Length: 155
Figure 1 (spheres, rainbow, N blue to C red):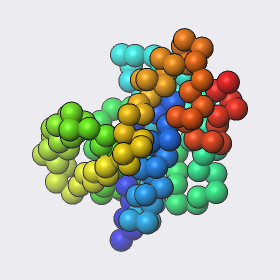
Figure 2: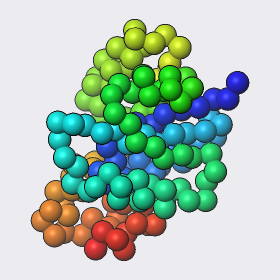
Figure 3: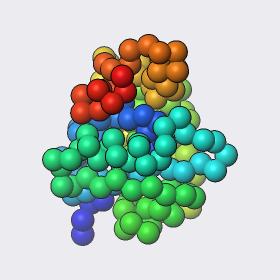
Figure 4: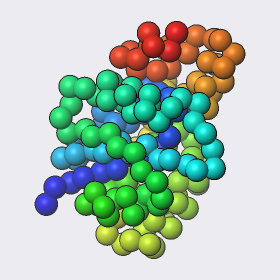
């Protein structure tokens, strides 16, 4: 049986924090599906297509990573993709409390899915897509907060 993990998020945009979590998790899994969730209640800052392209570019050399989009519940997406793990990064204790509740609810909906938490490295713990978007909206330089493969496209 393959160990398949889903790493869900909006990735609006993908950050060096996301990149680090994915690279550090890769040795644990046969495949990681980076799943860009579509939220009907909010528009993304970057288009869904652009976010998908960027993530594919960042991980272009890694055959064990797939990038997909989905709507609905993450546990339903996991079932469809035959993934038994949800991968989540934690930056702060507030992240842990929020993610713990979601993990427990996901587990109650589907007992075969386990959530795996990976702590961010200290130097990346302050980086959040929300902050990166705010820097970009205000014409600041966010290049050091996004993967090197897409830095030029954000300028």
